[in-house]
Image 1 (tube, helix red, strand yellow):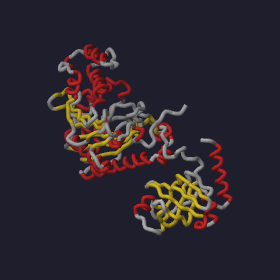
Image 2: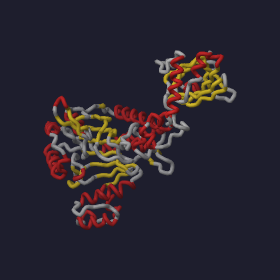
Image 3: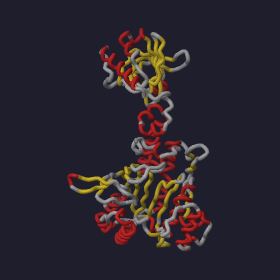
Image 4: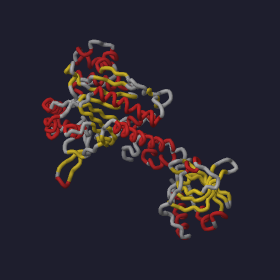
Length: 479
């Protein structure tokens, strides 16, 4: 932006002040919005509207302007002989981007456009910086993310996306509350990070002279509530993971976690399927979502397939799980994957799954019965102790929701925590003794699941990057 433009606007601000006009007004009592002017039109109806000026067309003693608020746009018709000399002097000092309040009567122009014939206009906020050139088309993604306020001003589809995000979350709450779940809040600062395998953000609590962590997951606290007798709970929470940025990852993200006592992962599959389809139907009006040509069909029932079957089918190798690590590594490398020489069979297999299989699962797919070594907080499969009774819901090539038949044996849980620390070193953290003590009090059998809200919004709106569905995504610092 040219400094000259800003200086010109400051000059107008000074002129306004000299005329006794406050450039930053107080409240303005609106009687309707732009959409209401169109929807409830009545010839001669008196209205008070307010919003941002996005177009000004001057014709001597007459000015036409477009005023836009969150509901849409309404045209203003301003004549000097109607608003008076003093008020018209204000009009002449208005710029695109200024926020104004207008009182007047509704009428329809000769061109058939519903408009407000202004009786008076008041300046509510003088914009010192202009809107982007061609205000209706801010396209540069970097600018859109860094200056989201401009993105929201000039891109109506972006505002609509975030309105839909709010509606999706509202619908999720209603869906769960109708089924007897209650919403709870658990700590975002924790003395021991747990509930997921991820690097935490560290902070320091001065009053207690101790290190703390921003939570990577609320799971262990929600399970404490199951122990306490709260049988159906959910939390819409912010999680923080000190990891990389990508099209699918932001270090601060929104998760929905749900736990149901006396349930299992099959109950959670039904719950997740119902919750997602309910949100799609009520907010999107359809179960076919996403961009045209790449639509995702959410019509239930969704596909269910075992993890091992996916691996065997993809590799066309029924003997895969009996092969040696060297053989497995060689196969994976031939397929273009980077495999370390001492990689274990589980690591190699899961690398194939994450890099080669999961990205191809576009339509909703419940991947069942994962290897026990991947999931330390789930109950073992009743028919095969090398597996756990879990699912991963994959949609559009990304994990959307894991779900477990939860582990309730405190001794087995301690053993798994110890094994995780041995295998993961310092990054695996410490054992949460308070959580284990809670489990030893007696935790009911339960099903649990977590849904990535940002990814769900991406799926339902057709967004291609997580940054498009987070109002203020994390970005690399400008150099």
